[in-house]
Amino acid sequence: MSRILFIFLIFAGLACTDKENPVIMNVQAEPGNSGKNDQDSTFYYLALGDSYTIGESVEENERFPVQLVEKLKDQGFKMQPAKIVARTGWTTDELAAAIENENLKESYNLVTLLIGVNNQYRGRSADEYRGEFRELLQTAIDFANNKSQNVIVISIPDYGVTPFGQNRNPEQIAKEIDEYNAINFQETLQANARYVEITAISREALNNETLVASDGLHPSGEIYRRWVEKILPEAKEILESQNK
Image (cartoon, rainbow, N blue to C red; front, top):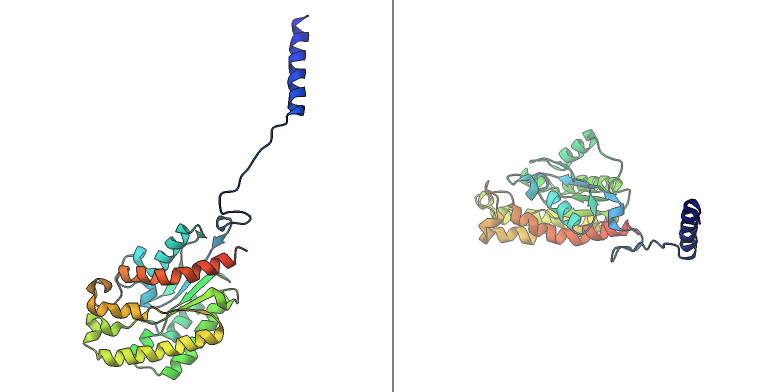
């Protein structure tokens, strides 16, 4: 048998073997990730508020929107950095005006809204707060692709328990904060959005100085972490509903 014929027979035999026993590629999905999974989508989060949202007197990574994004990443969600529209001292009307001047996406997967403490601090009426908060909540819903269940309203903390607030009639502060929170809770229910109550946690700062930032007024990173523990289940549910 010639050398050329021998090589030809070897290759012919290999070809026959491949046809009889084709290679099967077995690609297995990761456990718990059948179908579309969290990593298939990138999620966008818009946080609207004031000093409590921008994280006055804490490091950037301690802000509650930033902590929330990190927790959602830990849950397997592919998150863009939070888009924060907030500034220390803003009232409802000032937040509304700022939103108008921001270059925002048309829609976000998740929106949080926390606003009103500066209305109370400046002595503005509850009726004015109700009307302006209602408009802001609708704006938040609009940015949540007109889906109210993708919006989380967060209650206003009670700064009367802080060293700053203790010198400014803390009983009156608590009473008015409760009144404002009753309003934003009612408006949230009416709009069929979600609500997370963190005021009770904020009042623990009266006897726990670790819950107050170095300025003696704003929450510490630790109390923001505890807020996130309450916000996270709602946020996770919102994002999971968009993966179905």
